[in-house]
Image (cartoon, rainbow, N blue to C red; front, side, top):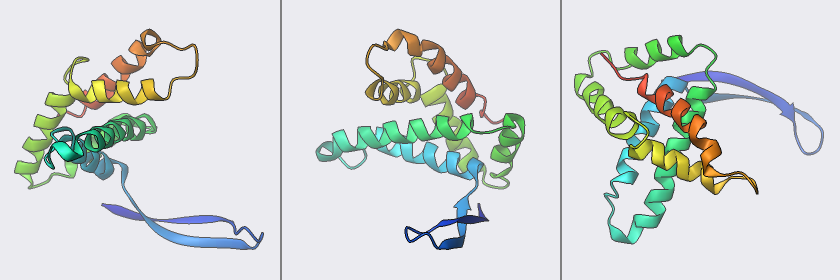
Length: 148
């Protein structure tokens, strides 16, 4: 689920620095983000947390698309995504349900959450209509994870 990475750079003082960090593998991160998006969207914590949970769900949807968009080999990413379930049939089925419920087509909540995230960061003069192509692309990317 994680891998070690070396980060090199400079401290504010200019002194060179190097650190080994553990990062979550992209396919595992997308799985975690799908689960978190679903939980926040369904607002399991109640009415008092509705606005915060909606914002969190938007962030997770945006992160899912961003991680997938950063992949240089989407076919390999899909294979790794599917392999992570191994014997976890229940988790695999739950993940399929989430992908279908949120990304099966452009009218689903995951795409709408992603659109809300994009709209909130639109530069002046850009319209939602100009985002339709991006929304179609994002929906197809995430829906392509549907597991056999």
